[in-house]
Image (cartoon, rainbow, N blue to C red; front, side, top):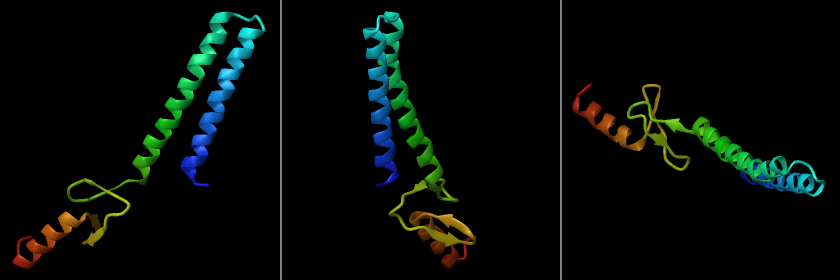
Length: 103
């Protein structure tokens, strides 16, 4: 199982558990406002946390071109130019400039 499927399953289980807890509180005669809040805001909090986690994780996994600062995708080629990681477009431009003698 990969990381994405595992965290998705955790988010689903936590959402179901918060809804079940809210329903149990409502059925037991506890304060209706608390039970309703747990039923609604529990899953909302879980899914905001889930998507926030992936947003942050994607930012840590991203590799940016040292020249144009564009994110280089996982399937794109990365080039090394004077100990800097650059994208294919910048590699072409920099190598063409280097061949012409422009620094």
